[in-house]
Amino acid sequence: MDAQAMTQIEVRLPENHRSAALAREFTRKTLTRWGHHCWQDAAQVVSELVSNVLLHGHGQPVVRLSAVHDGIRVEVADDSPLPPTAASDTGGLGMRLVERMSTAWGVSKLDRGKVVWCELPAVPNPLPA
Image (tube, rainbow, N blue to C red; front, side, top):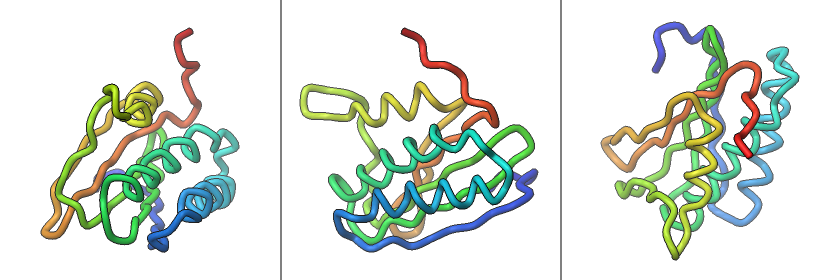
């Protein structure tokens, strides 16, 4: 966890098809409450990471949002130790989107499973054409 985090909240989601939508709504409400009116990028990233858990991981996705001095840190944990993969013929385009929208991202191993994290600027950068 970033030592400069000011605010942090997390939610454990069900392991079903509704989780990505629930994660987007959780992100929108949380960031709006924290005064971030540019919550759309964070909601998209959270949705992609939760979808990855549902498609490729296992266990209930856990979403953690942290407000840090220069933006938002997003973490999504699950019980699978396998890291996400980059884009290929069989998928992975969501991780490419996460990479492009984030200032940094990575994977940290847990005792059980992993957490995929990324950091987003407080004001989104436009994606290159």
